[in-house]
Length: 84
Image 1 (tube, rainbow, N blue to C red):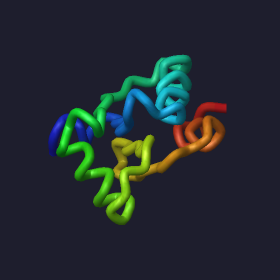
Image 2 (image 1 turned 45 degrees about the vertical axis):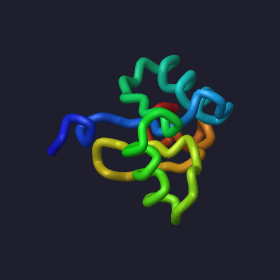
Image 3 (image 1 turned 135 degrees about the vertical axis):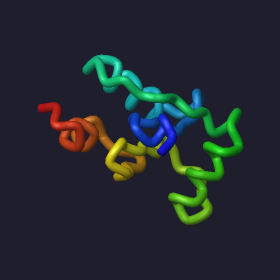
Image 4 (image 1 turned 120 degrees about the vertical axis):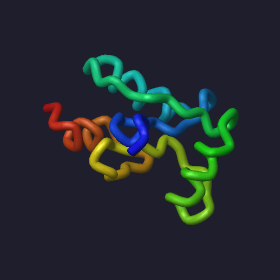
């Protein structure tokens, strides 16, 4: 299993306000993650397209357990991480 599969990975783009918001949330709660920019990384873009039925929808967040959230609110992200 690759190292990326053992960490939380945020697939996004710097121009996306939802991706920036999710990153701020994770940073504020000290959650470590790997950032993959879909505009600069074709493998990341391909993963997002595969996950979202051919569409680039960001942020797409993959968790170490394999679960995925797409465009989560801060509340959804917090619940998934067990952060109240």
